Structures are given as C-alpha cells and as structure tokens.
Amino acid sequence: MAPKKSAKASAVITIQDDGTLNVNVSFTDVDGLPITGLTAWPAAVALPTVAFSDATPGPSAFSYVAASAPAASTDVSNAFVVGVIGCVQPPVPGSGQGVDTTLTIASGLTNQTAPVAVDAGMLTMTADASAPGGVVVSVQN
Image (cartoon, one colour):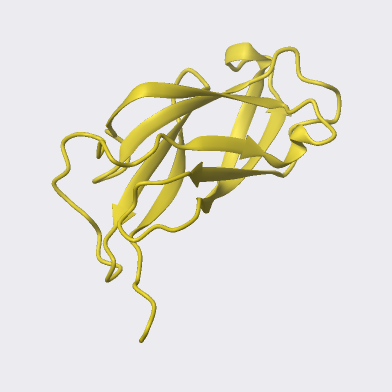
C-alpha cells in the first residue's frame, strides 16, 4: 500500500515599509492543490517556528517574533502572517549575508507524521544610513 500523502505548507517573506519582514504561510492539500478560503489559522496546526542559518555559531543578524494569532496576509494571497523578522541592532560586523531561513511546523497538517521544515528564503542585510534602522534587507524567496 502506498503511503498516505500529507498536506504541505509554503512560506514567503515579504518586506514591509518599516524595514521589517512578514513571514507568510500558505497551505496545499494532500493532492498538492492550494487551500483557499481559510479565514483563520487552522486550530489543529501548530504555530510555526523560524530558524536562521547564522544562529550557529551566532549571534544571528535577525530576530523572529511569532504572531500569537496569525492573521490573513495582505501581501500573499491565501496566506497567513505568522510572525515578523527584524534586524538585530546594531548588526554584528560581517553578519547578515546570505542567511537561509527555515520555517518549521511541528504538527497538525493532514497526515503529518513528523515536523515539516520549509525553506522560507535567503536574507541579506546591507548598510544604508537612509533606511529605517540604518540597514536594508533583501529577500531571495
């Protein structure tokens, strides 16, 4: 018997006017089709965590604050903003270059048997005295 397919999640990071970054999560069903029409975060799905590749040996150039109640995204269709990424100030010299971001959902997706890790994109921070906080972040999703 073939193993059961599981629902999946995807993540997209969007840059806001204030220099912060929203982490947006959307879902696909067991057949890989987008799940649309959700008006609230599914209660059975664990809130995601986010990790940065530069956290080891650290410190990371970025911080993550999870949303206590994910809200519908205005940037990404059929997605929820699950948290906000900010730049650690002041940045550690040489940090913030090519930082891979991984989002993990521990449980709750249909047929999920283990934590699901999703590549959320690559972040790069560059100095810019005219930008909020003195840095600009670019995202490669």
